Each structure stands twice: as C-alpha cells, then as structure tokens.
Image 1 (cartoon, rainbow, N blue to C red):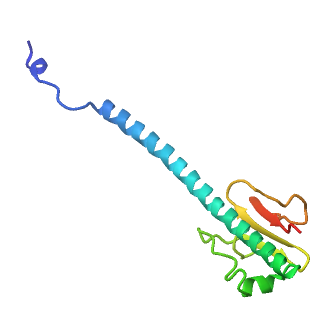
Image 2 (image 1 turned 90 degrees about the horizontal axis):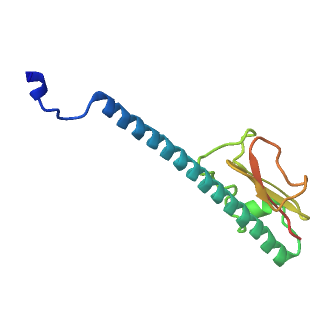
Image 3 (image 1 turned 60 degrees about the horizontal axis):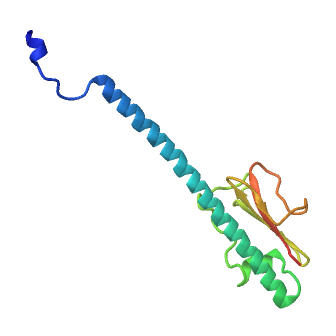
Length: 143
C-alpha cells in the first residue's frame, strides 16, 4: 500500500462545506422574508386598530352630542388627544402627512390609514377613500 492511502481523512471536503453554506443561506433568506412579512402585518394591524379607535371616538361623540364634531374639535379636544399617531416606521405620505388621513364635518367623517398590505374597512363608496399608491383601510360615519 502506498503511504497516501494510509492517511486517515479527518474533516469535511470543500464541496461538503459549500453545500452546507448554501443550505444555511437559503434558510436564512426564507426566514428573513417571513420576518419582514410578519412586521408588515403587525404594522397594518396597529394602523387598523388606530382607525377603529378613531371611528369609535367619533361615534361616542355623536352619541353624546347627536352630531359629529369637526376635525379641529376632535384633534385638539379631549376626544382624540394627539392625532394622528406616529406611524411605527415614521413613514410620511407623498403630501407630507402621516399615513393617517381624515376629513370630518358635523354631518360625517372619514378616517383612513395607508396600509403596507391590503385594504378594507367599512367605507364602500367613493366619498371616503384616498387615491394613492397602496391599500387604504377607511372607516366612514355610521349614523
């Protein structure tokens, strides 16, 4: 026998190491995509909850006063406090406002949030929507 065949092989070959590194890289990229999607869904859930809270506040105001308040009364008064809330990513929309939009009068209101994924809400007509890129979750007056 030759001396070369007597040497025992310890460790991994370069090919085996490259295969393991490639598999780990693939798993990490899949995990990162899933994590990013989970973060987007969480931010969208927060925005929907904020809009629902504002809608509930407008409806409570209506129950007490039998009319809706104008935006200035709702924002500066004890009803909403500081509105709009800061988006969790600090995103600004194209018009320089936060991703929350609202219009209101003594007859009706419309509040919307710019979502990263999806849309929805109870606003089914064109009187309460925001035309921009992305999906908006909008709530409209219920009275």
